[in-house]
Length: 374
Image (cartoon, rainbow, N blue to C red; front, side):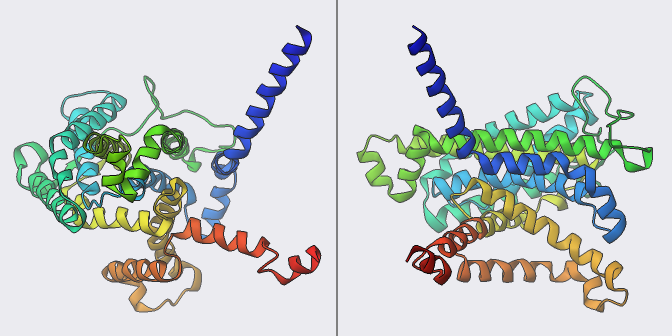
């Protein structure tokens, strides 16, 4: 009995170590997020780059991007409509919390449900393939934008919705809550707590999607990406699989939009134009399709870049005049980054950097390691 018990404990220990090894990148990133507020305030005072504030937005866009990555990178279904689900989630949460008086987290939960329901309603577009599907989802994004702008009795049109309740802890008020490292109220405790809340949700979404792509459903998605005919021949219900991943992508887009609305406190239709869908698509491509971590990397690059450009005049003093009008050229810059990524790192930043590290470790490429092997 003792030997059998010891064997079970050893097996459990080995499984736990294997789990830690498989998720070591997630654990390292979790620790990085955990300690960020400890040094971010000093960095903000030094270089005028508010890491905590920006990382809140990175978290929101990561949720939307990982949903699109499941649909495009793993299932191979091209979509330009993620911004539509983002906008639906944002307005659902905003209207329910602002006009109906729902608690913030109930509004966000219903934003997920409404976005998923809308995904089910428009799922017939998945009968299309390739660029036809891309054009159909592009049309979806335009329709949602026009609806948000023109239904003024509900959405207030271009005036937008202001005074949206702030993101807070469930059943409590976030204001006045203290953290150990906050020594004075000028260090914005509300900002830090929102940061932690958002990233708890982000890690939950990343773990969910990471486990999903390793499961039987994930294998079906990959088979669908490679060949729908072959996947159907192997017993995959192609239509059902497409709908499931499309609805999950829509739900994640709605979750991101719901959080965004309560985070910003104000929304208007111009925040959810086709440009948003293209930005999320760019995050996925730059970070790396068929990579859960690619969503994080792509969201970080696209979100940090404008903020860094805005901070340059504070660093150097007399900055070029065109930097002050960077927003006019932002689309060109994103396009250039997208083109360069597709040329030099077609698999995205995460895959490209991991391949670079792997090749440098290879004795067939690195002359120093070759000498050591010899």
